[in-house]
Image (tube, rainbow over all chains, first blue to last red; front, top):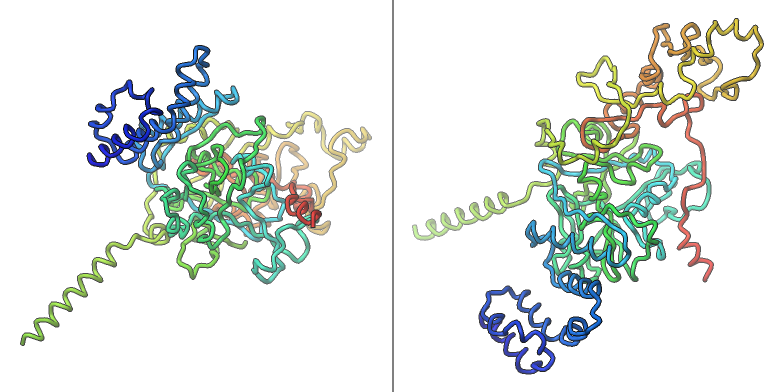
Length: 337
Length: 210
């Protein structure tokens, strides 16, 4: 560790001595002696390399704009924060506050970003009644609005597939139906992220940016994702979506009740997907799709609670899951009346 | 002699390896479900948002259930309730007075068929503020699911359990279940065909560009 720090120190002094000048005031020897993690060292090293010019122009200018200064300092801290899973409670609160403040500085509107953790003895599960779904697509609308999905590329987590009666074949299913529903002789089946107990997407991620939370929700740290899309390829259910561009959400339509691992605003080049509306479900509410469904085809709850609706469905209805042979153990069951 | 020692050690080693493997395996989700049979008590301070949702509810009255759940009230949702405000006299008498079309004249029954149902199958002709069962017992409008359950027993069972209908106020207990009439118009209970509320226009645009 020490060696690494020393090296970092040397490099900064040696080749970039000129650029790093404004930071020099803090005392390089202090920096070098302090025990820092690899990431911390990297941060300090880059501090010297990158902000020389920026800091000089910002902090030394006579007409220094306070807001600009605050913003750049917040962005700086945001850029060098840790993976969410490694953060302490304090760090989580800090990053959430930074995100709220940054949004306020950018748009003069307040948002509420939560870092609420899982509740003990809760494992979320979902059931979908294929005899009830009528293909109205109200769930998709609710999902897009709730989760601040990109309007310009029409990103949708949920897909509703129109199957002919008597077969479940997703290659023959109609996903872009354009007629009154329900169509005679057809049934409808919604797919989304199944929050597998054994999620292949998590295995595939090379940087640990996606994982399964205690309550069974598979989440993504949008600030840790490198956008390689391995998870997208690994998911056997087409559950994941990629932001090819900066998501566009009109300011008036932004859902301001957000969660760090859920519907907070994403950026270009990161993965996202259904989080069972983590910002809602962790507060005891049903996901937006469940609430919006006019037919009651969607059932959500705690599968560890023997008195929950979802458990009644699992215990009393004939349920099935997709591609069970893969051993992914989705927590998303289909059933019929 | 030496060989049997080696065999013995290899055997013990293999058993140990398998034992440790099977032990270290995470319990599958399904196993967790089967094991969890104890009632879970929730710390409601965790779910303050749900408790803030204001829905007028009453406790259900389902005879065969040990623990009842909550259902939204119905009577106060009906704009001209109590019915007895207008229905001051028996219906035949009101009709004889020829008041004409004043209220709910536009209701036509599209529920089962004329052989089995008319207004008086559900509405109490003597007490207009109440419903009536098949055996002429009165049923409160707040508990109209009792009325429906007389014929639709399968749906009623699913609703009681949680497979039919909708949960109001989130997944966390106490359970607030939407009643039959919350989704189905009792005079025309079937869901209607309609256009989906959105179309996959991105796909349509792509097709236009081709």
